Length: 82
Image 1: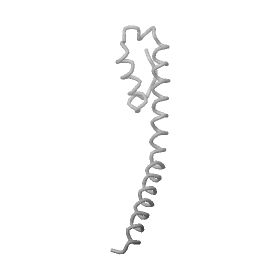
Image 2: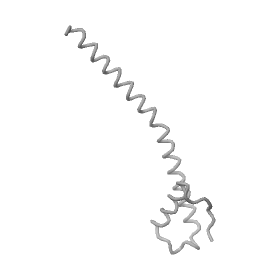
Image 3: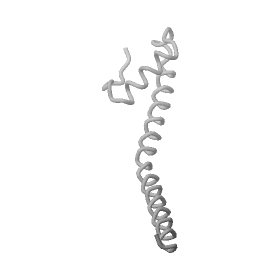
Image 4: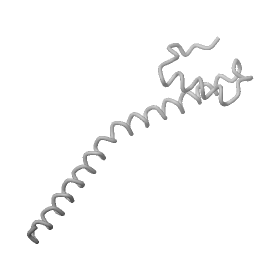
């Protein structure tokens, strides 16, 4: 193997790995945006449930969080509490 071929291989590896890292970083942005929106939905729903404390006074925190997860995941279509 010629001495200059070793340097070319290293250059190709560096360029390829740099390109791969940049593409992976770009592909993470939509996932991070979706996670941010879901977390905002969860926080807003949990605070809304805590405001309706009168009919939900005997619910514990894990139950309220479970309801908030269901709402944010689309499992609960109506947010009407009786």
